[in-house]
Length: 68
Image (cartoon, rainbow, N blue to C red; front, side, top):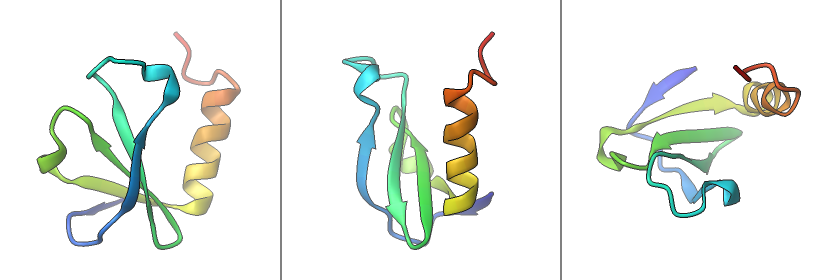
């Protein structure tokens, strides 16, 4: 994971499952990967991942790895 405030992600979006909640993260595209930020505090910056890291994370979420 790389902490970044200098790259410029595009296409920020929230999950369609977040509905109208404000306690969400947003995901944007950034060269060769993804950027993630807090929807409540967008000015705090974002972190970036490589495409492989993001794919592994999304797969783990889908497989229930982080379910309580």
